[in-house]
Image (cartoon, rainbow, N blue to C red; front, side, top):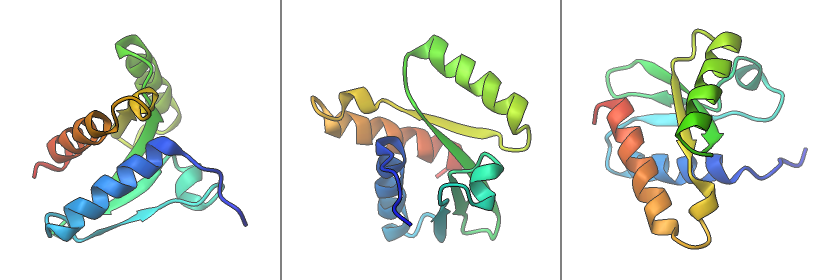
Length: 113
């Protein structure tokens, strides 16, 4: 099955790979379209070094109001998935370093690393 490209998830995956290389987390799983994780509103299941796992939903950023709206909609559909990150993919062409920097900063804040 061919997977549809998702630039926001691709950014998160690259940042998570960097964090794994630093041994700050033990691993992660990225969902596949229409699999069980996807149905549960989980794009990534991140495995922490303490043995627990953090479910993460990834969205494309569209401004602060947009984030709040997306978070409310996500919480209504998937109340058990508390972690949501919005990636500013609109900046990928003009300032990719900033997109990765912001994403890494937010992930580290969520993961408390």
